[in-house]
Image 1 (spheres, rainbow, N blue to C red):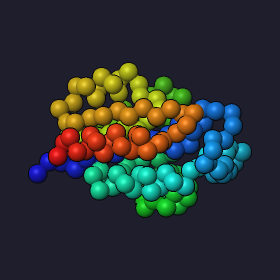
Image 2 (cartoon, rainbow, N blue to C red):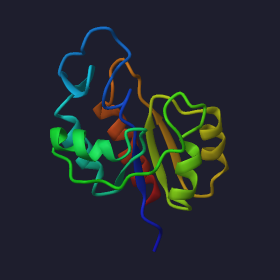
Image 3 (cartoon, rainbow, N blue to C red):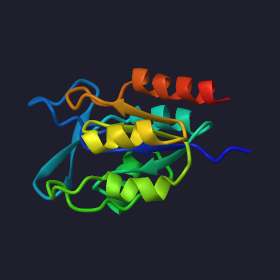
Image 4 (cartoon, rainbow, N blue to C red):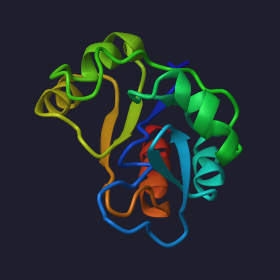
Length: 157
C-alpha cells in the first residue's frame, strides 16, 4: 500500500487573495486579526473537501494553528493537521524547512502563491510524486487548481 497523499494548503495568497487592492468578487472581508482584513470565499471549504477523498488536507501556512481557529470555521472545514513553519513571514526562512521533514516520503500537492526556488528543487528531487500548484494571489484558489490536484491523484492510481 502506498503512503497517504497530502494536500498542503497555504492561506495568504491562496485562500486570502491579497494581490489586488479591491476585494475580489465572491469574497467577503473579515477582521480576523486586529486592523487586518482577511478575504474569505465560503466556496473554498467545499472545494477543498473535494480533495479529501484522495488527499489528507494539511495547513502549510504561517498562520499555523490560527488557520484552524479562525479560518476553518468560516469555510466549514474540520480541524486539519498543521505543519509548523520554520519562521515568521519575512524572516527569510523558507516554509520548506518545516515541510520537507513533516511530509517525509508521502506524495504531495502543495498550493501556494510563493514557492521558493528551494521548493522547486526539492519537488523535482523527491522520489514521491510531488506537484507544486501555483495560485495567483490576485484571484486565489479556483476549481482549476483543485482539478489539477485531482488529476495528479488519478495519475498515481
